[in-house]
Amino acid sequence: MKIICVGRNYVEHIEELNNEKPKEPIIFFKPTVSLNKSTDFSLPEFSNDIHHEIEIIFEIGKEGKMIELKNSLSYISKIGLGVDFTARDIQKKNKKKGLPWSFAKCFDNSASISKLMNINKFKEINNINFSLLKNKVKVQEGNSKLMIFNIEYLIHYISQKITLEKGDIIFTGTPKGVGKISNQDILEGYINDEKILNISIN
Ligand code: ZN
Image (cartoon, rainbow, N blue to C red; front, side, top):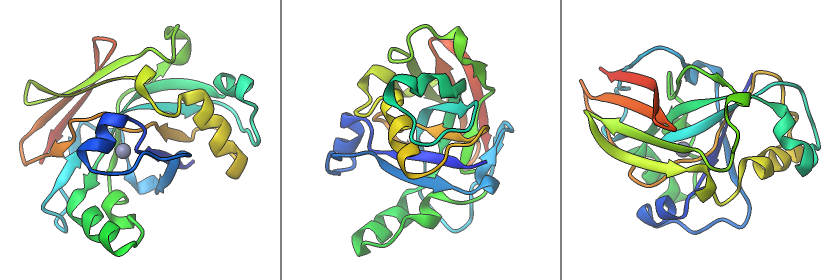
């Protein structure tokens, strides 16, 4: 499987990091050792500025390439929340030099995910509320209707370039409110008011 991530998919998050609004989706990947289904996340030693990015995630249910927009949703089997942990200090340094983000995004457990739920549970894919609490304080809140490129388009777009396989996970981008995490923080993620994600930082 592969982990496919979308960058800069919410206007207010683009503004908080002073980035430009993209004309087509910004896609990057994470390796399988980044996948973390446990409720613990250990801070890597090479960064002093690890940020949380709460995101809606989708699991692909069947293989597809060159998927037509109208068929996109039939390729999704499950939905959940993920935290795209990001070493913001390394990302800033690399962006300045025009270098790849690799180790800003790719490290052990940097794609931490909640339990996944059947997609049929969600009637309106483009109207899903989600939020992240850090130590019981709400720090991020979003709705899938605010995505610049919606999920149907993302599946269509990505599958024009690379084959989607059963089990692939797509991170769909983070809303505003990203911030630093520290040892002993507790992160809790809610989707449509249901708590499905719980991560202790250590
Ligand atoms: Zn992200």
